[in-house]
Amino acid sequence: MSRPSILVARYVLPELIDRLSQHFDVDANQEDRVFTQPELIARLQGKAGAFITANEKIDAALLDACPGLRAVCTMAVGYNNIDVAACTARGILVSNTPDVLTESTADFGFALMMAAARRVTESERFLRDGRWTHWTYSLMNGVDVYGKTLGIFGMGRIGQAIARRGAFGFGMKVIYHNRSPLPAAIETPLGARWVDKDTLLREADHLVLVVPYSPVVHHAIGVDELALMKPTATLTNIARGGVVDDAALVEALRHGRIGAAALDVYEGEPKLNPGLLEVPNVVLTPHIASATGATRKAMADLAADNLIAALTGGTPPTPVRL
Ligand code: GLV
Image (cartoon, rainbow, N blue to C red; front, side):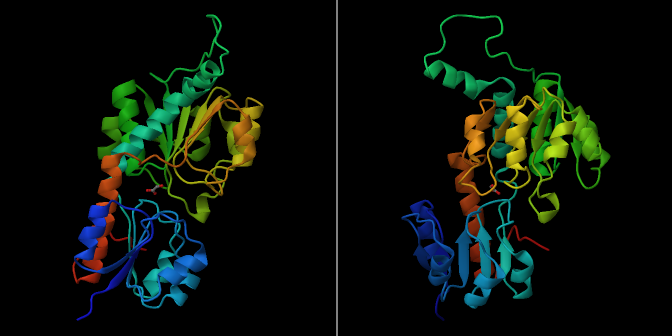
């Protein structure tokens, strides 16, 4: 029986290519080119499996052009780049990589929130620019994190991990908004309270967005929502670009309608709204919340486990279900 062929769409550690090669004929993009959509379609011809990242778009047009595909395995927890309904309708397995990135991603979300609150990157720019000449009473005064109200929009695994850091490490009061409240077994140890979205916006001193992207949450934070927030509040987005209306955020930061923001994700990334580069009170990072060596390896290994199981008659450990 001939071995299935797969595409590994982006660079991964060579040992993972070796492992996949024990099961498949592997076409590996180790030069890490970012494929255009026609290039991706061309490289997927004759492939049964696609090992992808959050950057490759798997839509119905691509699936129609790649009729041999049987599994699409992304090394990411978010899968808004994949048309899961179209895959499912064609009997194509989709998997993601939950759990293995939860703690690293929560660490980073918390770090961003703290950096915004305490003006860490703004201070560093000030110092590097040679502008630090003397101590002053209000030099880079920020806002406190300890004991403040942490608001979480999207209280899934990563949201809960951020809540643990806030509640247990920083004495924060935790409020959150989700489609529905979580069971008391999760809320009670965290002292977390479900609130409606407007209350979340009004009461949070530090608001962290961790909600999975879908059209329902497109621009969930826009002009009206920013207007409800405290003028001293921070806003951190580690969810996806598009959850925040970046243009509205630039205006809110520019006019001091909120205190500061921290973003790891952007509408239309890797391009970003140029206004974000002009306002000082925003921390900007290039979509790296899960980026530790150990976590990236765990994500890639889990994506490979799913692909191997899907194409060799096994049970994929973390399938995405509709
Ligand atoms: C990264 O953004 C992920 O979804 O894992």
